[in-house]
Amino acid sequence: MFDYHVHTTFSYDCNLPLAESCPAAITAGVTEIAFTDHVEHEPGDEGFGYYKAEDYFRAIDEARAQWGDRLTILRGAEVDFNERTADDVRRFMERYGAEYDFVIGSVHYGDDRQIIFPDYFADRSLDEVFAPYFERIRLAVESGLFDTIGHLDLPKRYAPQSHRHYDPLRYRALLEPVFHAMIARGVAFEINTSGLRQTPKTSMPGPAIVRWYADAGGRLITTGTDSHAAKTIGAGLETTLAMLPLCGIDAVASFRRRRPTRVPIADLVSASASAR
Ligand SMILES: [Zn+2]
Ligand SMILES: [Zn+2]
Image (tube, rainbow, N blue to C red):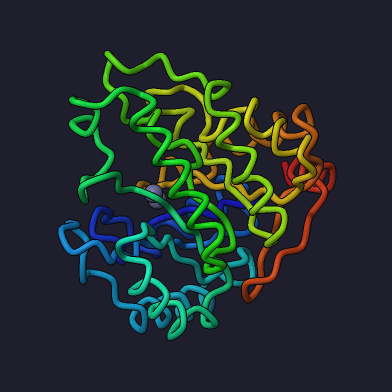
């Protein structure tokens, strides 16, 4: 199983050291892990200026020396993106992009430099949150900077009780151009399993969106738990590997040095069964 979205102490919001997460991944049956710490360029963000790329690369090299024989450890990042910070993000990627195996582009901010947390919904309808959000996702894809898109319908995770009537069908017309841009550029999106264990109780995105993407001709999917704690590494990946074939996806993407290969889900499932 591939867990391609895991945070470490290099993220401002995480105190999970590599010394704990690598053994936890091996125990959970994860065979490839990408440590994807937050890279923030939004000046008001709590994590602004926290990330240190060179220190991170050194720590990954040390982890590889210790656990690399049992776990494939990838250099990853989760880079926040919006149109206001795009120039800074581009400069970061020009400097460091080639150093990574795998880079997630994630939209965490909405209008007026506000982060999409429950307060953001107070004076906005669901449409007023989701329509600009999916537009920013499209810009992230078209930037050409990223290998995959993080938590494709994130606002559903932070929607307060008054805004829980999210139905992806309502946004299908906005998602179609996103899919076409992804397919044209070879950009994947992730199945982020944190939604399964949190409020939405479904992955981000859920099966309907995955099916529409497959129907549009898309086949490039990554999987990740968005773990900030050792106990959630690998959580929900088996459920996801069972879901994907039902949605028309028969492989998950593996990355080395920013290049994907598609690994058949049947091979992953049989390997994990024989490892038991
Ligand atoms: Zn994120
Ligand atoms: Zn994350």
